[in-house]
Image 1 (cartoon, one colour):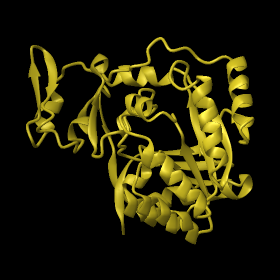
Image 2 (cartoon, rainbow, N blue to C red; image 1 turned 180 degrees about the vertical axis):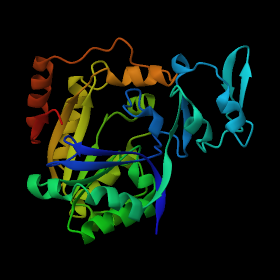
Image 3 (tube, rainbow, N blue to C red; image 1 turned 90 degrees about the vertical axis):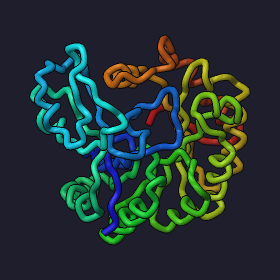
Length: 301
């Protein structure tokens, strides 16, 4: 069966589509958003995550690595990134939980066995399965096979996507996807490049193609003060989405700093330090601006 790299399977997910869901997070994303809630998802291969504050420098991990990637330098643990293959032997043996492997190779059958345990909740709540990430469509063969298997069981399917994939891939997903959760982060291409690392032309083109192809789309925009909350951008978002068939609504997702702790935990730079949570008034005003362009808006997930 098709296999892919998954870094998390969340049960009882309530903000990833209708009802109670299982959210399957596939590893790898071509974007590097400043506010990314899953920064450990961005690399496309399994990787070692290290919490230095937990490490007791016992040295047990040194002998466990078949590639000799781990050593003690100056009384501290050092992992050579050029040697580390993310196999996880050092994490398995670490007594303090300082080492964790993010990402594992699984096949469709293995994921489905986890999904089907929750099937009763889908039926009672109108829920289902959401493929998320990372960018799930960057593992297209695995994603399509998993979606097809869910459909075979009559399970509602959703894909949470940035849209930064080939048009062929995203159009191929339409017959197997009941709902697309589609991120629209910024309408200005230069600012989109600055804050996410990629241009938005492919993203905007693909959501239009999805709509023309008959897809049901729930657009979502993270609402981040100082990044994309100015009226010019809000008007542009509303005007653009109003012209895309299939868009049922836009969810404004208020920025919060929860991701900062995760960046700090894994030694990653967080570039939005000091950014504040938007006020209710600013969210309501933004909703009014967008709705005036003809798009229904909901605040929150």
